[in-house]
Length: 50
Image 1: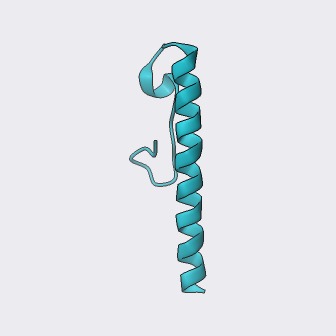
Image 2: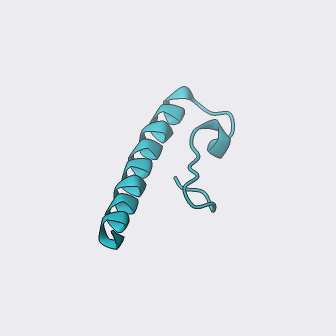
Image 3: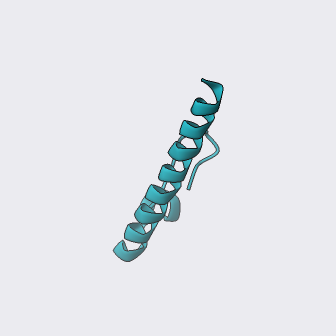
C-alpha cells in the first residue's frame, strides 16, 4: 500500500476510485498492516545503527 514516495501510503477511493465501502474498509486494513510493517522495519534499522 506504500506509494512511490517512501513512507507515504494510500488506500480506498484514492487508489480505486469510487467503489464499494467494503473495498475501502479492506484497503484501510491492508494499509494499516503495511504501515505497521514499515514502522517495525524502520525501528529495527534504527536499533542496529544506534
